Image 1 (cartoon, helix red, strand yellow):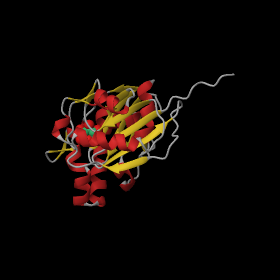
Image 2 (image 1 turned 30 degrees about the vertical axis):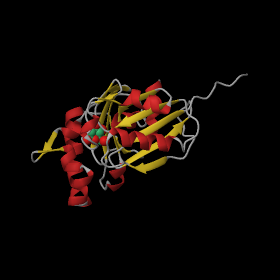
Image 3 (image 1 turned 90 degrees about the vertical axis):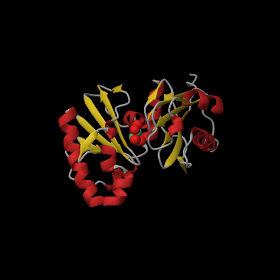
Image 4 (image 1 turned 30 degrees about the horizontal axis):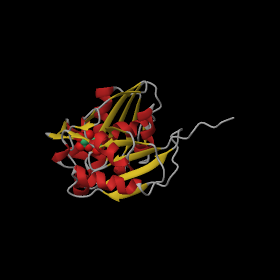
Length: 233
Ligand code: BGC
């Protein structure tokens, strides 16, 4: 019997501090070691795209690419980029990168992509990511409600979730205080969304030191890349 040709997907996670790539097979399993580079600063489209292209050249063969972007994304165009650079507003990332990689490219919000790598597909599932920024994604029976931007909503003391819990604040206030705030944030999100499951990812999720409810799960950072396969379903 002839085997189904393996389509390889280059999965890209653009973060405020690192750009990461991995290649996934048809089933969404990694076929390469994850590659990472620091996000070039200032993080304008040109230099970030150069970084992605350079990383992609270490990843062998691929036929298409999925990108998780740390801002609002609509039809491949980036609409906000609070932690990168203002020049991303209105930038056609999908088409520009497709030309550079010579492969079709799909782009969604980074937390949305991470969610696809983590959810079970039943009920109301909320995902938050704790990194440079505060990411959020909402799924109903596995269907994404795109571009949920909880991070920039008012949380407490006149500040947003991102201002209260982003990496810069974690470094400034320390883990103990940050954990106490995170506990309040989880309680607030629970009352707002009445989720069946909450998944917490991002580079700083390893700093969580809380007793979590059984329906709240910490997810590994690699989910940000594994979710890339869902963009082609
Ligand atoms: C952005 C979100 C992003 C999050 C995590 C926030 O500042 O507005 O779109 O998902 O950071 O990168």
